[in-house]
Length: 578
Image (tube, rainbow, N blue to C red):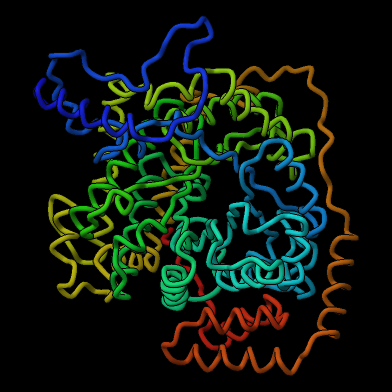
């Protein structure tokens, strides 16, 4: 880009910055030196990279979504938490909010993630162990007791049974007297990543995509601030993918959901702002920063050029970040505090919108109150003591970071071509291939990227790609090419064993007893009618959200709702591809 164009861009940014809301804060260094809100090429100097780098708040959003960066508002501290029963998790939420958390993020136990009730045989020994047990709306009432759902944003990390859980959340909000149309939060709902990595699905892909489409329609019409989809790369990376694979698989999943919305006749400029993303912040500091910057750039370009989004908000990639659980070690666990801080800083330097920092003991168990507080304070120290809020995209223009951003983007583009080829679409530029294929009879009615993803799931291609990447990294650890302190080197330590949080078996017994009483006390005839209405609608094409919400209001259980849909739609069995 020539010097004149760069100067014009700087002037555009300055006008937006001048009129944007900013915090009243000290934006000097620790020594009192003034800092500029953004930095760019010296005046009068051309820089060919500026077409790709740009300015904060300007397409292609490489440097962030807002002209102010964190001077406008810091990232949201959103700690992921859930264990035992609803009362225990409620107490943890209140502790986190009191200690500076800016929003809630719900972790569910394995039976809930699989759409099972706590007293089903398949749930034995798992209730409350990796998250909170939720069987019906009454558990949601207890989970958020004393927490105003109209005044706090709530993220729920669940995909397979996301819609019934969402309806229980809505019913709980109604019982608090909250107008559900004003709710703000995020539901994960990303079923593609379940088939690709996490393996917590209920049905074959088609019924899940139907439910997601129903949810997108319902939220666009009734709850405009709520984000019905959080497209998750976190679990893909935790399964062993590379950074480029995490980026490409996740954005491809996002493109598929855009195609789903368009296939439902929704306006992309209206529904795309309801899509958000969830990424892993791994231990390679600069690679992660480059990944986040490339993600914004790719998403903006595809949304504009392929899917026709005209507004900035529809082109924005907003994302939550969690530090890498897979990087934590049971050996010398206090090293995990350092790892988490480095990973959190990478997320911040990459412009994350919200952040969860893992606790040092999470490789062994759910976090204790003490380790959860250390994880929370890690974010507070980074926010309040390091000066990272002062400058938007402070590494923008770094020769290394810009080259790495370009390289990761190029690797992702190669993977997009592979995914499109799985769906029968070939060419040299993936965006051009996808654009040409839209509306011209892709193998799947939803769209060309969806065609490739579903074929890759069926063939086991994603499984094989991730397994190969994980195997390569393990070989590098074993041959000494890569290192993990305390595991592959520097084994001696004076650190004693940690005291970890243990979930008593009483939690399961008490949850099952409460569930039994709840079934006995409810209007079972009303529950049966609600479940029958769901089955009737599932046989056709009607939107299912209101019907599932009616069942949630009647205290139908998660297992009952998912059970009747399993009987109608069947269960999925994967192909490994290995």
